[in-house]
Length: 265
Image (cartoon, rainbow, N blue to C red; front, side, top):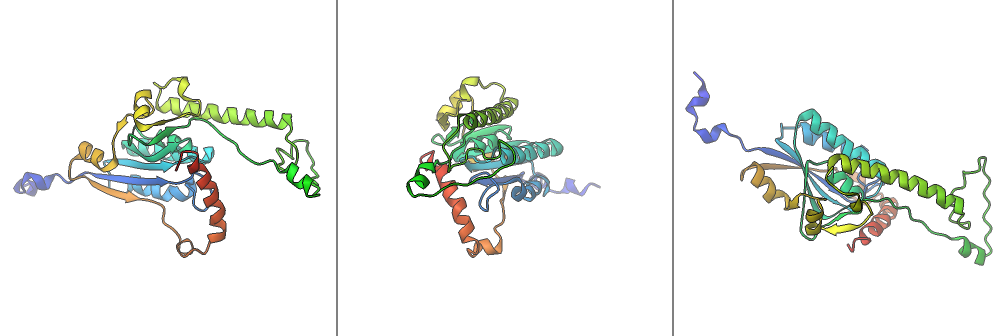
């Protein structure tokens, strides 16, 4: 006799499990950044542990490294295909630039009406300090083997050929970014790839995202009111918890604050 036939129907249906991966912060290889190396074990556990019905991404990122964005998003897509699991993305404050790159790893994207979404572009920023050191009698000495080794030296006047070379690099990265977005959201027009950002409500109208919605209510709507949402995120090391890496982390924090400030946060 099948003992399950003796059980009331509700006991036969376990609540669905959804793994929720938090992707918070700047994307890069710094101490506080989102990197593929740091996130690999988190993402692998989320897709494999406990037979989840789906994986959700909770994204709050102003972007950062294109390479790390590509590696993280590629890992998510590979596991989604291998495990045959749907992936849902939910945007909190920002999914801009690399943050939107990560969001496109999902099968659908939702955001708050006031979230900032988009910035499909590539940026390079720096400082020119040649005037400063000149005023203070400081002489810059650089010796290279190879004509292109001293590239965009901040202590020397900017060279037109360096700017042209950098522009070619940025444009090639931009093409790669556009190709990725088009592969995931083929309905988007080229007018959206200018680096501009939109609110969540505007992003629905442009097709950048699929709707307005928050993670838990939406997951309950899709997978039932009793859905079990299991959070996953990077673990902080003991030294970081007690501030032992404060000096190095300060530089990362300044860089990250500059990225957030671009979006008024």
